[in-house]
Image (cartoon, rainbow, N blue to C red; front, side):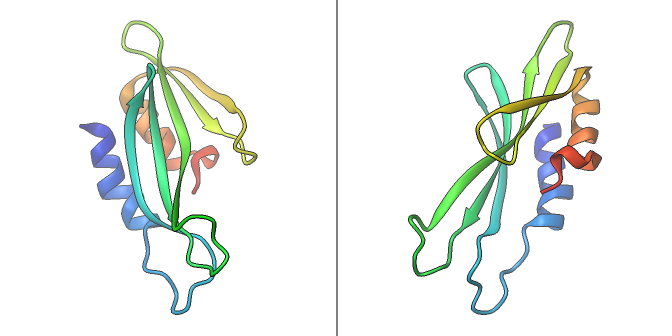
Length: 109
């Protein structure tokens, strides 16, 4: 699967790094993808090491692909507020979506 290749060969090596010793801030421990309600999402799992953390981890969805027609997708990015998706690109092939998630600043983790 192309999403799995992007995650394992590009995103994880770049963004899933060992924490600093005595890390106090959230850091990425995993990146994954999944279908949910007609959309394909890319997500990160963060560890929350601080003593006041509400949870030891949380998940953040950062990209969403929506199937349009003829095998084309609309690509969305989650706003920094975490409250709404922003349409970034439209009518892309799967390969074009993977490349955009890899290089476009909208999807920089």
